[in-house]
Length: 356
Image (cartoon, rainbow, N blue to C red):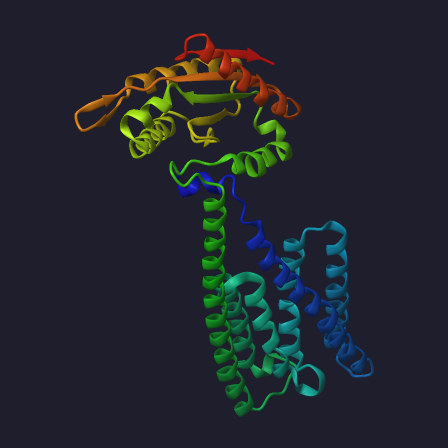
């Protein structure tokens, strides 16, 4: 099955949750420790004649505390992270504009560049930092328009060091994101291998039980009515006995490819046993499911496998059941298996079906 098919079922939540956890830790640090530092300086400026600075520091401290506390209540961590990332930008401008506590505002801007990259990634973080730097440059190039009083040499050294700071933060975040993406892909491949049959590359029984059905139970309305088909190759033992197990494996691969080519991307075709396959048609009613199953049966019978000028003709028997909710799945699978054996007893190369 192709990569994009597996992406619908195999979750990368484990990799994504690690990244969210990292951002959450940064959010908590910025909110509690950073908020406390901002509040400390807000208290230091209580008696200073800088109302804008006092107001900016106090509002920012309350915002940082409130945002992280609310994140425990609404549980939308990404929203809290985004709010914090954008919410600290006015504080940066206020600190540079007013000069901060004892005219040290420029020196307190460096941490904001780092957290911006952490919260927004290397690309959006770079754009936001360019915007912040542009506004800071505009203020510093117009010293008569701001309250702060910075020395010219202090301004030039700050801008140079701040750009270096942005550059190194960008490099770090870029290669961190590359490494994270590679680890996520490795994790994805491991999950796919664990849930695949190595011969046919179809999903295996483990995938059906632990991945697909788990999704069905979580998102029930997206799958029903559902057709369950258990398919078995007729007289497969004779193929192995007459031509050898290597050819038997080729036949299994051939039938697997036929089924993949003649089913929808939303369908699941899994190898669950030696010559037994499970096919699942989500959002398919009984009549349509039987029509598709019979078409598939005929296609397999007509698509023989060629081996050294020998045509190996194969037929399949199917047990088909239509279920209407997740509670019927276990019984539906059992009943489909019983109908498969009934199809075998009734002559093979046929379908036995039941609407639950």
